Image 1: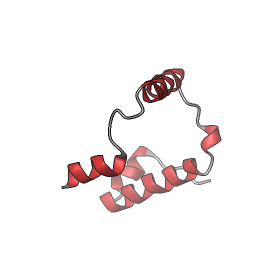
Image 2 (image 1 turned 60 degrees about the vertical axis):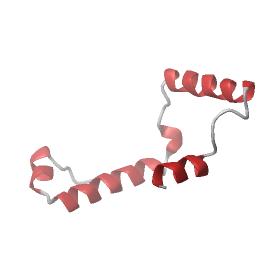
Image 3 (image 1 turned 45 degrees about the vertical axis):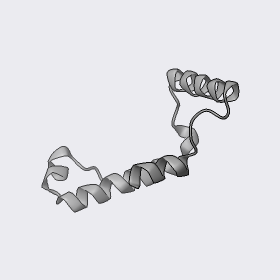
Image 4 (image 1 turned 45 degrees about the horizontal axis):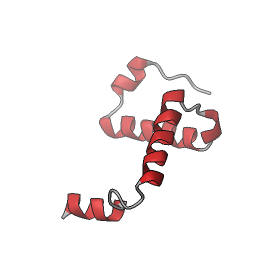
Length: 71
């Protein structure tokens, strides 16, 4: 694997840096099990799931929210 220094990255064009970030993200996404979820994320997800189960008619579906935002 070739090493890339901070100065190498600074010399790249914005488009090259964006491509590098995309390539890095894609490589991480190939192994989601290797990324540990912080405990506070798990707690927040559990809290939101409980709130949903307590009031399933509360809130709006994503498609409706997106339509309001973009509309």
